Length: 152
Image (tube, rainbow, N blue to C red; front, top):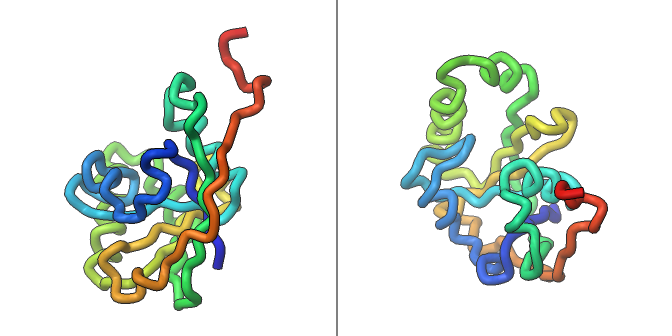
């Protein structure tokens, strides 16, 4: 399977999950390593647009194509996410799902995008035994289309 990651040039080749460990995320608590990827390039772009300040969209952004070995992947369905998304404790509930998954030491879990629920992200566990088979295929510079400029 090929997945995609959009990040600053200086971090694009770092597959350690260190960024998620430092800041936490929807599916992981601070201190837990996860590598967030998307199954579509366009979904990776949408995620950056939603989660990052526009000033960070400047030069120096790259798109990595990452090859993940074929393994059995658990999928979290939108029906699960939609029940939790509006809960006052949604962050903790999502992070518990992620923590429970990490404890199984599996390589990957597929989770729906909150932006486009019919599309999926593949979260990788850098501590999984098969993670050494995860490989970057290519890294290409990425520029956002000028029409996305919010300061018109």
